[in-house]
Image 1 (cartoon, rainbow, N blue to C red):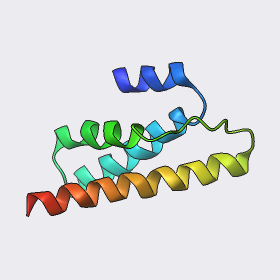
Image 2: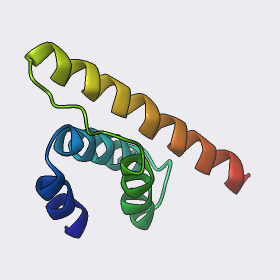
Image 3: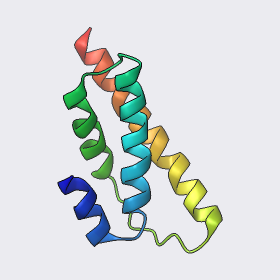
Image 4: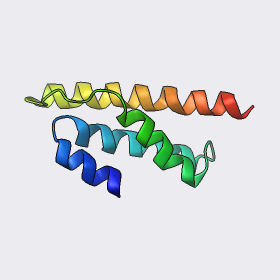
Length: 84
C-alpha cells in the first residue's frame, strides 16, 4: 500500500506504472508463476524505472501502460530464470 501512496505523491506516469505492474504481477501469481510476496517485489522493481513523463493525452496513457507492462513482464521473466 505504501508503494501506491508513493506513486500518488509522485504523480505523472507513476500511478499508471503502479497499476500496470501490479496487474502483471497479480496475474502471474494467479497463474502460479510467482509467489504472493513476489507481487510487491515485481511492482517495486518496475517502479525503479523513470515514469516521470506527464500523461497529457490518452495516447500517452496507453503508451505508458504498454511500456510498463513490458518492463514488468521482463522483470517477472528474470525472476523465473533465477529460480531455475
